[in-house]
Image (cartoon, rainbow, N blue to C red; front, side, top):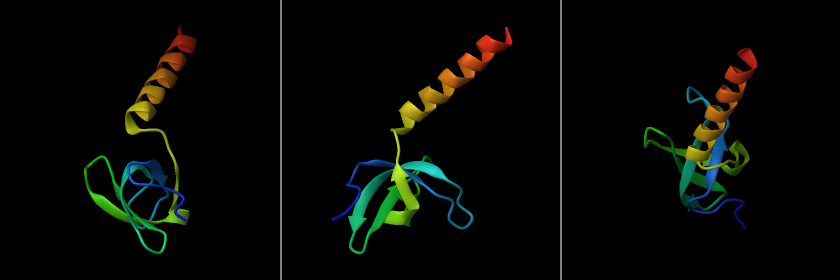
Length: 76
């Protein structure tokens, strides 16, 4: 049984020249491999052990903005 399903959001570890990224699973292949789409709409093949659950990209961006706002507050 697959750990992730189509349309799940995942974080990929760094593989080769492609750094870690948050993407959405577009297809689940046999053998524990997944097709993941990144921000640039490129598709990457990743093994199950190279992925971890993640929040949707918009939620990650909002969280980063919240963290920056909190840091700005402390600098005032």
